[in-house]
Length: 354
Image 1 (cartoon, helix red, strand yellow):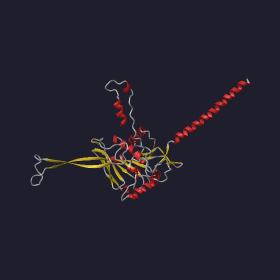
Image 2 (image 1 turned 90 degrees about the vertical axis):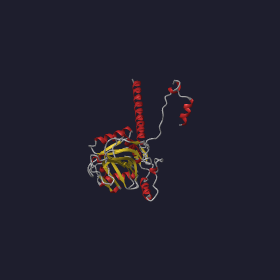
Image 3 (image 1 turned 30 degrees about the vertical axis):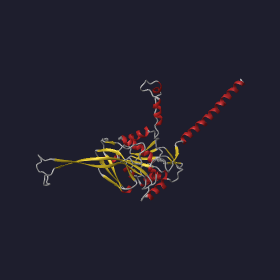
Image 4 (image 1 turned 180 degrees about the vertical axis):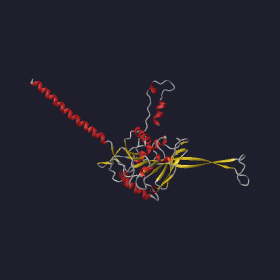
């Protein structure tokens, strides 16, 4: 009986000790993986191949140096890889589009709902000196500018302190044909532009990373666009689109007077083309905050690519996807493929040299 009790106590003691060791190991693994979410923000530069990350040289070089002084402030700051998205509660379509792109690219994000003035309650932006967000997105530039003074200063100061930026859409203004001037940003926006065609990307835009220039999209989605008129060297056009308008006039006679006989009149038709900027980059030379402006939502497939590039740009590389691509070769094609499609020694040499 005593031997049985001794064995039972020994087994129970070993079980408890093993359980404690397992708990300690599990906690250590959890802390290790959680700590991997924090990355030190390298200020100069994160993406060395992009000229966006180098100070400007010229008459406005003092503005560029100020930008990099601000962005280089305390390089030991850490950031969580998370996106803060500021939207209205009623913006179901925009929320779905943004969430779809972020989730498809495995980008953690958090929504905050906008209220008028200072009524918007933003979440805690820092935690023990660590920035909780690497990018801030606003559904509309109007909502960003309509923030109360305290909230706008809170967002701007956070972006300057941690060297990150803001992505601004203008989708909500598309239904108000008008021109809005924002003197603070040296920028004007014309809303409600219809029938834009021939969309192309500026090949020299430093925002481009995944997106490649060179092609023209003649027929983009039929929707209303917002176009930008910048007035400062901090801005760089990323995407262009063309508006073509046909003007019909009566052909004049030999004396230069228009013909009055409308039945036999000959009409002259001229087409005028106007090129607009539909996606714009602010490199932060004005106030140390980088921004990217989209003249439409994410329903246009090209904007999805530019949106991913914008995430990398304003986060200073936190969300920069790797450009490395790998090809998978079915090994059956090497050993059991029939003559004519079987991989040869010469094929292997060519593929290894690519």
